[in-house]
Length: 323
Length: 311
Image 1 (tube, each protein chain N blue to C red):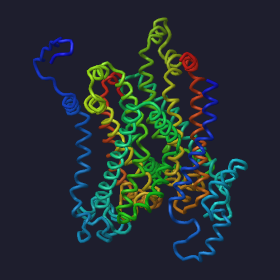
Image 2 (image 1 turned 180 degrees about the horizontal axis):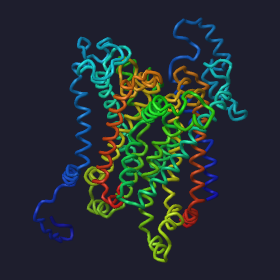
Image 3 (image 1 turned 90 degrees about the vertical axis):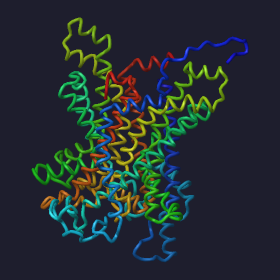
Image 4 (image 1 turned 120 degrees about the vertical axis):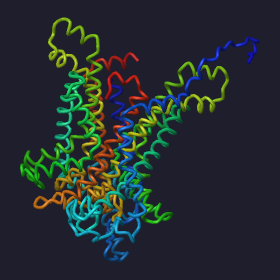
């Protein structure tokens, strides 16, 4: 490769091919014990929920999530075999099967909302950071204003406004789910957009990007090959931390009775519908509330733990003062 | 600094106007009428008349009539569902409850959070540090309705130390305030710990120790103030968390008449004037809180002002 001046660049090939940045990150992630621990606990909760779906969603099965009188109403946990492992509610529905289906829905809504917010956050952050100028100021002012809004209220109102429009295209049940994740996803991208923008701005001023420009690489190549790979770290960390946030928002909405429509359960709506029975001062049926809540808390705990672990991998500077 | 403050104050009504428009748009798009009842069909003429009485017969009213009334007389109109009450009345009766709860929770979160955060930074890698970090992970992960339920089961149902469903004495506030404070507290502990660790490594702290000051004196006199800034900047979002978090806590502890309950009922009942009023009140509180935090920032750290002038 010779340049215009006829000067031939001397280049000594490295002895061993260096690992690609992606491979390097992957190896670091796999070596982090917290990622292992949190990941396996998360799978231990999520897999049973997913794998039992053929039974819990089959109306003919006694494991159906809405099978009333599958057990004697108000059975405490442990009486009634595996189906009654978590006891039953006042309609005789097994808390176990409802928690399993609730888990699938909670996780699905949480994941979908997180994906939406990551896509929105990353693309808006990239646009603002890479384009700069008036696009940047406009987008960032919008983000500033949205930060000032009481965003739980916004989720609630978005859900109300979007639901009828979507009901035209989907069945009510699906529309309900889609609206839930849309509403949550549409308001939770703000932090990520700011983080991505900041990263892009600091990357843009670095010498290696300048070198790319000097060599004459087109903008999109710089963008794809040199900017995007450097964003993988922070985006992964924030995405992992967005999932528990989204699940929490969904639980919050369903707990208030504005989220999922009964009889479909989520962990939040299970907590809501069993609250009065479980917190009854005279004869509390604690199990109806305890098990969905424990599952929810445990899931959020592992996901946050996972996010913390990933942050230590991708942000070694913080390792000195680990959170 | 004054310039910045003025700029922010001028932005205030603008942001509120945007929020009003957004809220109006969302209400307007959402179907369902506050006057229609699900159980029986209503005469369209009667509906029309009702709507007229509430100034809701045309969407334009929300753009022409209400903004003027709100600005001139702080009047959001009558509640469309809770007949006979004006939105203003309902908000002013609920605001003290929600504010007391929110402020109590915020107070607990700041005091306990800073204490635990400071101690776990000073005794780094000690038992307290690990216990604190584990607890904060719980605080961030466990939703308020779960901690609330656990508190009710233990302290109300089992130990019978506290009453439930009452409001008035300090005893009624303690449990809900604790349940509400855990999430912001967890964040404050983490922030305080990290910023304290940074400050403890600074040169002037070493100097202070070297000239013979005791460790506790250095921490209290020299470190706390400097480590407080990140916590302070979190107070704005924390106020939002406690204010909206009170929806759930009000339900768990059966507190009547709070703003959270009002909002949920207004949203499900399509009480348009009530929703608009509540969103505006919430947003005003949030914006005021953020502004206050910015002002406090310069009070706690006078250098910030100078840096801005220099830049």
